[in-house]
Length: 262
Ligand SMILES: C[S@@+](CC[C@H](N)C(=O)[O-])C[C@H]1O[C@@H](n2cnc3c(N)ncnc32)[C@H](O)[C@@H]1O
Image (tube, rainbow, N blue to C red; front, side):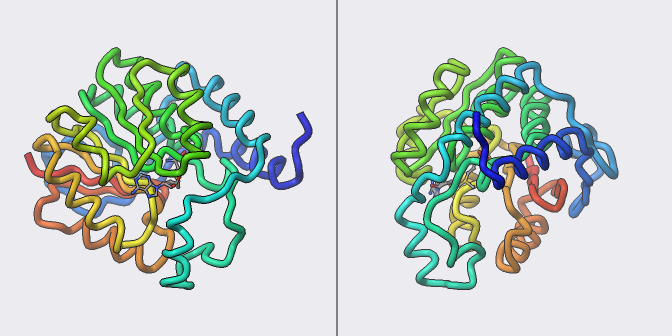
């Protein structure tokens, strides 16, 4: 396989970062929360899921497809606020530009093995890399399913092809989380919600509120890219201190986890 220079650098970086421990920063601590009982105080190296090398091989195959067009709604977001990071970048992205990194994926798989959730929801799917990490945890726990939502037809086609083959526990859905969640969850409450779509407070805050309305008491909400911009940092800090949150923690200054009160 011939890789361009960008792909080679990404692959090398992923290799170097493959086993690093994720630094932990606690925001709210209640003393008796699930997060505090299960996560160490300062840093965490999650064990690799059994099928990690399969996941990374599939990611490399998708990387070789090169950049794919962004969902058209991003243009409206960028036009409305040119200060959003990457507003002036090309309107196509490859998997390495948007995917969850391997050690964070290991954390997601670990979270699922420990919690044994019935229903995990993810938005967005993108090319399906984080989805495979969540699914690998569900498969190892032999419990639960993942509903993953993606409105970009091109990206959803790439992701759903390999996700369905990877695990019977994954349901890839073409369309937004907001428009489709209630049709697919069959009244089931959400145990873990992963918010990894458009990283602005205007989008994230209503999405978190929607999750809370449908969440199992004591459920977890995982926010990606909490340091993406000043706007996202402020969004995370506000959610981390929300009165409905029992405990909140940031991993690698990248992913924030909210444990809601039971
Ligand atoms: C950063 S990427 C997700 C990366 C992916 N979770 C991973 O780690 O492999 C963000 C994705 O969210 C999708 N998206 C944006 N708004 C959405 C929404 N309301 N519902 C579902 N997906 C959305 C975008 O089209 C894009 O593919």
